[in-house]
Image 1 (cartoon, protein in one colour):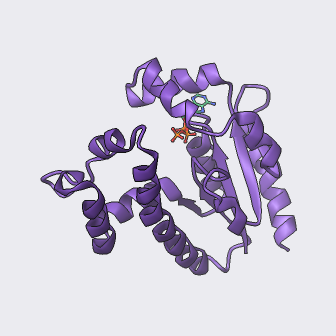
Image 2: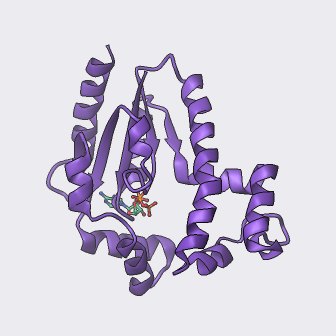
Image 3: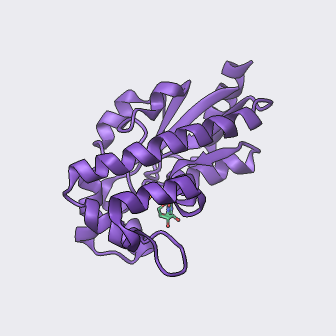
Amino acid sequence: MLKVGITGGIGSGKTTVCRIFETLGVSVYYADDRAKALMNKDENIRNRVIALFGMDAYLTDGQLNRKYIAERVFQNQPLLAQLNAVVHPAVFNDSQQWFMQHEDKPYTLYEAAILFESGSHLFLDKTITVFAPLEERVARTMKRDKASKEEVMERVAKQLPEEEKIKKADFVIYNDHSAPLIGQVLTIHQRLIELSG
Ligand code: ATP
């Protein structure tokens, strides 16, 4: 089974593209969602997050206080590194188990906003970058997250530039109206099935 990473800048359309792959029967591991779920549910991780951030790390309903954590790690690189040291290995282990459960498939997708930045691509066989023009990414994300332009630009600034992600990837999907997404997905799907055979 081939393990294929899929990434792209904020609002590039990674999730939208993954949904198309899913309609073809491809299973997708959503790393960012799994990380949040682990931080909410895994007792060991919860305790380690509380050790780093205090009791305010979780809301009274038990859910992760993402806003508080984001504020605390903003411009505090060492604290962010400590948080990553808790979360990244947990996601890695969780994803390895998930991959094992999908061994019978020709290939699966591992979707993450930071793939090359986190080094996750090193344990994957192939990678796909989803590209969309910055203006559209910002406009779509502002609409989706009801966020200001400044807030979105702050998140953009923390990610690897799109050109770098394109250079590093084995495949690129252009979500820029130059060609229909479905056709691009089908071409890569066929190629990955061939490669897995
Ligand atoms: P993030 O990294 O922020 O999670 P993402 O890369 O997963 O973003 P999506 O959530 O798939 O991006 O897309 C961002 C927004 O843009 C969504 O609301 C989505 O519906 C919309 N969108 C993506 N691609 C297109 C498209 N080709 N046409 C219209 N809307 C689109």
